[in-house]
Length: 57
Image (cartoon, rainbow, N blue to C red; front, side, top):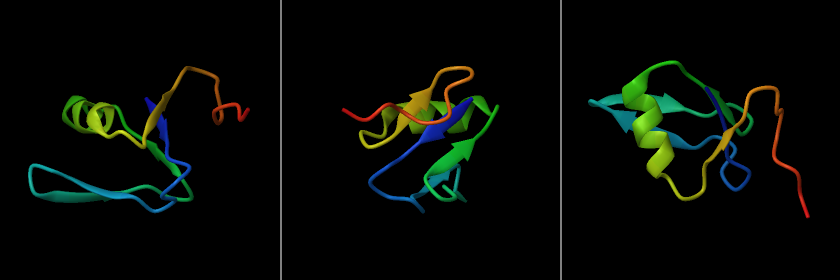
């Protein structure tokens, strides 16, 4: 699953005490624990399959 964060391009988050960081606004993972944490972050958007980045209005 791929995630996008426009506001914080190098957003850092922790899962089980391990540091993870977005690179240029993107983060990709198949880890269920990481996905659970990312789904709870308000500034992070989960990208659907084939979507490179969210459309801006």
